[in-house]
Length: 97
Image (cartoon, rainbow, N blue to C red; front, side):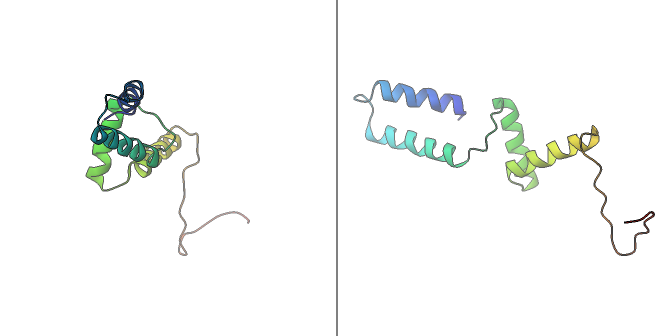
């Protein structure tokens, strides 16, 4: 269920609170709690969100970690961030420190 749909259902339940069953209210409140627990501060188009969820599950990563990786790699590939260079003890370096 998308965030927008849940918000609409919560508002509708609030408008018709006398007509809502205890079980329906419980389900809505649990969904709202889950949504709030997982808020990452990024609102995505439902289609994009669905693809990211599927890809994260396929890769065995959390969606926020996947988004961080995608954005980081995009920033590097478009020269907004420097290319990370990992040096090990055998790597030759030039210049002065």
